Image (cartoon, rainbow, N blue to C red; front, side, top):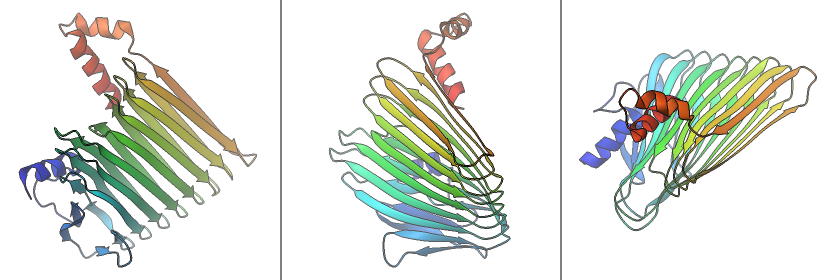
Length: 305
């Protein structure tokens, strides 16, 4: 792999050399490298582009890396990845996609990740999206995540897109069984004329199921963001969805949180806040010697931390 591709891997997956544990690196539409372990198997799909990641029951403490990188302009792909998390497992999965586009054609990665979290299993899923390149071609990504959490299962999803993606539509759909839990933390920043849409839909089907969906975003320049979040309480459950956005320059942000109680003991909350950086925050930092631009950067970085 060249230096550009190695840099992308480090940014999106914290990979500095070959990691311990299982991993699968996809580069420019094909398999670049793979490693499996006794408890984690990774198999290429026979019927379509993508992989199956199979984690044995009772697996503890393993970390799996599955990054995707594109460094060829004009490449467009659709990938299907299935994650089967065995009962009582406790693992971390680090994914993400990095695009380096120096040409004048669009580079695009679309992916559908389906999670099957077994009974009493626990998984942390980290996904980062990043783009760079001096070309005029766009870098676009459209990730879809489908989550099925069995009884007593737990999934925490951290998704980050901070730089370089011209257009994205991020869809997450989840169904949660008895005593299951889903935590989603989204961080997003757009600039220039970038567009970003986020669409969460969670069905709390199980008794004592719960979900907490939180998005923090910053929109700069002439960019546009749309946040949609729907939580359906179909049983005795607890659900919370929240969108906090900082708007700057001539950007536009729309937030549409929606909650529906289909059971008398469904407890659901939604929150949304959009606003500019407070003047007193800027003044306070500028009195410490920062320029206005430096003060803004400090506030934005702290907000998205």
